[in-house]
Amino acid sequence: MNDTQHGGQVYQFAQTQNNSTEQTLKTVLDFSASINPIQPQIHWPKLTRAAQAQLIHYPDTEQRALTHAIAKRFSLNAQQVTLTNGISSAILQLFSELKPDTTLLFTPIYSEYQRAAHKHSTHIIESTQWNAPLPTSLTQNSVVVLVNPSTPEGIFTPPQTLEPLLKQIKQHNCWLLVDESFLPFIGFQANLSLRPQLNQQPKWMVLQSLTKYYACPGIRIGALFAAPETLTPFTWPAWPISVLDEQFMLHALNDTQHDQNTHCFLQSETKPFIKALKQSPFIAHIYPSQANFILAKTHVKAAWLAEQLKAHRILIRDCHSFGLGENHVRIAIKSNPQNQQLITALKVLSLKQ
Image 1 (tube, rainbow, N blue to C red):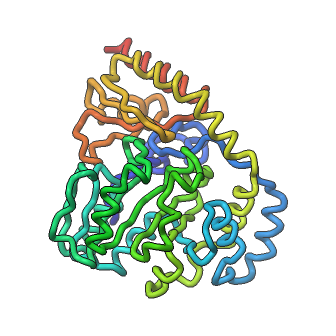
Image 2 (cartoon, one colour):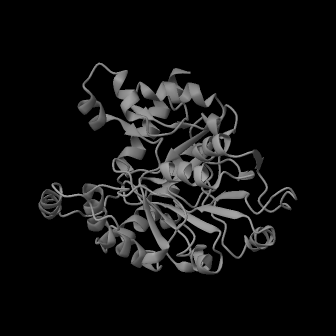
């Protein structure tokens, strides 16, 4: 059994309710998973026709159409793109292949990196200071993992600011995994990412979730970006994603208004939502974030607050599993009506205190 803690546990919540799972999924407000509330425009009849025609066949083993579409979107060559069945499975696969001597994790960090490191690494080092000198024990078969923008804080560090760290990694000639899953919420520009450096650094990889920005966590699809030769020795499934996954993502990438719609939404909703949260007696501090979620320190235990909000059919993320203690929560930024429902629920809870 996988006891790793994640947000987005709507099915587990549904099992605790008297209503049907379908009804619960329609009414629950899930602020625990940082998914874009702006969905791409999908031509469902066209998608359905294409999927129906392909379901009786195996997927293209190279899945060229989607690989080329993702490469174009992220300004890469198709040879630099490897599709994966979500990022979580890619993390486990990478660590299984690399079997690092030492894994250096810059924390707080997505728990699947810790899970994979504990399973496949000889030694593990966790550090909160990415700008400190690297341990001298790092070998050429060691792995450094950095999430940028970070989670659960949502802090973005520009590549030029990371340069001292990158220089040290080059000197150690170790592996570098950079998770840029939330970077599309900031932008796709090449100067925001380490993607332009990959061809010159064959031991560097960028992990890119596609389900958060394109609002489709129900399908499992992600991508690894690297120099063309980097992932060749690794063993990957013949068909990492289904034809349904591929068709959805092709349609999502074809929505030319999705970027503008998403960024306009974040600009209009983030500041008012933060202002309202700060007025709650449960919230002690809001940390600055450039992503689509907010890290907050609470006056009460996060687990208690999360449990109380469940009565209002609202889920938030207790950040205890990130190693932040008992008084931190992560809250996704959702639509204005949904944000207002959370604010109202917090007010109701405060009146009961």
